Length: 282
DNA sequence: GAGAGTGTTGTAAC
DNA sequence: GGTTACAACACTCT
Image 1 (tube, protein in one colour):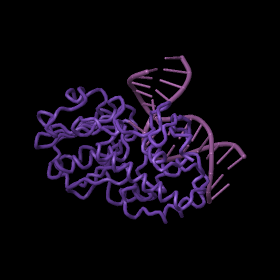
Image 2 (cartoon, chains in turn green, orange, purple):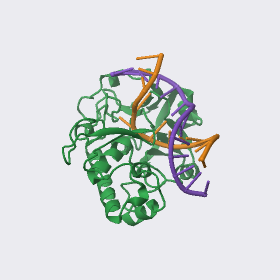
Image 3 (tube, protein in one colour):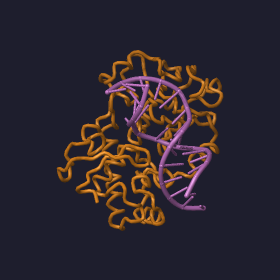
Image 4 (cartoon, helix red, strand yellow):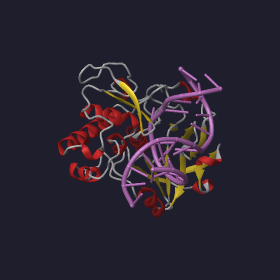
């Protein structure tokens, strides 16, 4: 289930192999997943691939865009003849057996490669849209955590009138994009800030610490290829991410805090499981 | 069978 | 209008 580092990992890998390839055939296994006329993709070339927040955008040779959101359970798997993009062995056995029962869309290219969109819960989507529609999708999104435009000053201003818990605020895409539940919990632990604090109660120093912790957490997530729990996320090669091996608090209820050794506690905040250290996160 | 799950959006109530 | 809680999306796993 992808967050920003997972999406970034997928985009980086696809950007190495997909540009220049021409779509030969598109097969829909579930109509709900694809919005638009999938048959009009045939014959189009993929020009390049970019990302904004957790939305992937494939620029196509007719000027339109294929945009993809994986939501909770989506996966994009790129398969060449032997399923060996990265040269190693995929972590997940099931990638040898595609399309699977969770495959919703299959895109075949003239060069013999195939891109599979798997999505267990059917929340994810693919849309064929114009540049204007892309702009509409992007409108209302705050800067990415990885965006230099995201500054301490900007966040101080954004938090100034917000009485929502800071964890809810940093997961609000209108304020900033890229921190999902796992990384939001970890960034707050790294910054030693209690997730329940009203956003406006943070001092400038704390906001600065939180921003740096957020950037550091996401950067590490990207370096490690994202997070895989229960084999649910794999990158385009079928490889699992490695962030879960260094995760600070998420899923570590009862285990020692990496800052102070106190037991990690789980609560619920904004409807989401929230892990934190009640000793050092204040 | 109940509950929870890494995302996002919409609704109703205050 | 801001805020908050909750449901919904649809499915699998514990």
